[in-house]
Image 1: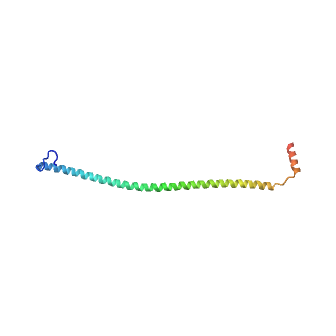
Image 2 (image 1 turned 180 degrees about the vertical axis):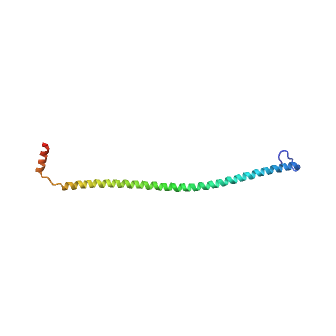
Image 3 (image 1 turned 45 degrees about the vertical axis):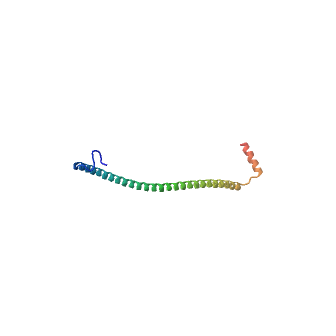
Length: 123
């Protein structure tokens, strides 16, 4: 079907030339848009590749951070157990030292204890 004002095969030479000029103008626009589409597709491809690399790197970093978090938690738990064991050991040693000191003190006779008690009352 012919466009407005065009009556078909009887189109005159000047009219055909005008239509050909319009066609060439439209073909130029089509080439420009195809080139723009190609540039945009290239950018999309580059950005897609960049996104994939960034996503992979992010996944590795997240995994490493998770592993560090686990290691830190395990280290803190072990440190707490060491502190608890150290405190228990100190308590046992204090008790043993106290027992050793008591055992090394001379045993007082009941008469000496009475004298000490009377001496303290008079002080």
